[in-house]
Amino acid sequence: MSISIPDLASVRARHPEAVAEAAARRVRRPLIGDSGRLMIVAADHPARGALRVGGRPLAMANRADLLERLCIALSRPGVDGVLATADILEDLLLLGVLDGKVVMGSMNRGGLAGASFEMDDRFTGHRAEDIERLRFDAGKLLLRVDYDDPGSLRTLEAAARAVDDMAARRLPLFVEPFISRRAEGKVCNDLSLGAVTRSIAIASGLGGTSAYTWLKLPVTEDPDDMAEALGASTLPAVLLGGEVGEDQEGAYEKWRKALRLPTVQGMVVGRSLLYPADGSVETAVDTAVGLL
Image (tube, rainbow, N blue to C red; front, side, top):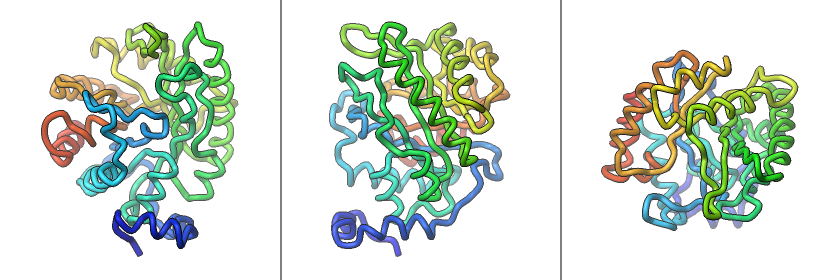
């Protein structure tokens, strides 16, 4: 039986077994549904300390507000599922809103935003065995490669092992690669054609098999370059949303162009849909679904 958001703490304190029970009875679905496309809402940012949305540094810190936004997004036609860390996914399980949805567990959140060790992105979230045990449908990992930071090598090795562990269980794994660098102490992702192409090539070669690997990719700085970048791999891909900006219409147009490319199967978008700069969650989600 589902509960309300104010009841979550009480249920967690008195009946922690309710999480496993909710996971066991969740109605599952295929990764790719009848539409042949994927529309996933992402909410794994808080576990990496990334709470900022636009000019609001703690926008994602209010858990009740975030859960309300997620419930609205998941209720909209065309939304296939959600990507999040254990705490958020378990709240959504208890709320009873994940039946018939694709559930993706976020695996590495150790590269905390702004930390000196940000590139050493340890796997502090879901393990492959957790995703299997909870009957979730896929996993996701973040792979940022900074050629000047040794932490990236440790992340690469851990990512390769995660690819192996997920493939051994026949579970899809969405790899989100970037070529990154530090500028004035802040990690910045390079979205040029050359950088995105290299990131795709690196991510595609991780592990002992790529049979269950998907790519989760940004659109290149010049959207017209995206077709060339995607030519680096035959793996299926989804587009990611990125930061909330004032030019949301421009972002929609970039996604619209990239969604026409043959390896692109859908979108995984978070803050720009959950915290739209202008308009409601419903409007932002419905507009993004319309692009598919």
